Length: 360
Image (tube, rainbow, N blue to C red; front, top):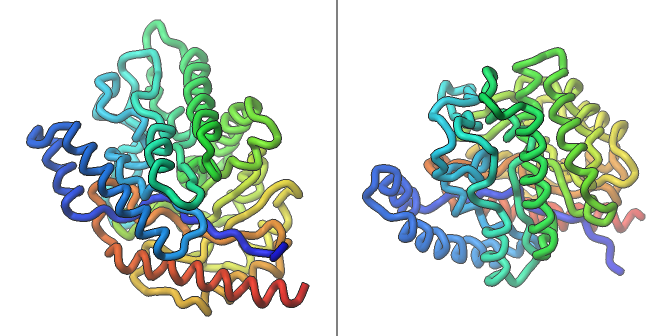
């Protein structure tokens, strides 16, 4: 069997103006949810066909239907949450509420990612991966002051049940991988340099993973990045040496780690090589979504070759540092540029395959 290097995207693809405008109109009551959803489904099919045409061996649905963004799509339009919540500040000064505070218990998903996957699988001609939000991010919807007659323990039990059910449903549908978006991992070290918050996040994720078989674990991945919204990041200044050793304590089979924009790539790769477990695979980011510069296939190949010096080839894959447009109003990146970047990743990965496997 021919040896290959796996390559996958993270998730989101920039939405066209027609969908961005429709979402804005929906928010002010000018467009119905049914009409918005119908348009988003059409846009999803377009994105998937475009990704297939690029030659992507694995695709996502482009997250066209995650109207409130990747962080709390599962709470979409719920009346159980306040306008306040866990707010993330980006380097350029803008902010997002990632986890609105729960005000009316119990905690439950209003929308689940398996619905997106079920639709995508109807139109896909290649395997489809599905991104879901991490339980650690959702744990932040419980307000610090607590909720009367609904303890934090009760909340966590409900959260675990909802998260595990969503992931299992995606796996049962036939997802190539289920990726947990864990963008708050690096950010947690900015909020709590002691690392206790990060450790609590990892413990919660591992508690959820105990509900899965070894075979299922090999189809579950963890994505970490410093954020990528409006071409800005929220935690890129945090050194990977504080994150990666704890991150790889998560008992998942796959890790998607932002790498191309790192200041000291060699140090980060060397560290991954030391902490990765034999049953784990790491997909390193070879494309920077927040940089308008188009990477070349040769540059991608060079980064992969460098990574292979620290990470076993059979545990190595490639991805993008982050999604390209994680929120519904993020129009900072041109879709044409995004597709050229994805093409460079695919071509660069193939170049690296030739060089690496010719040696082996």
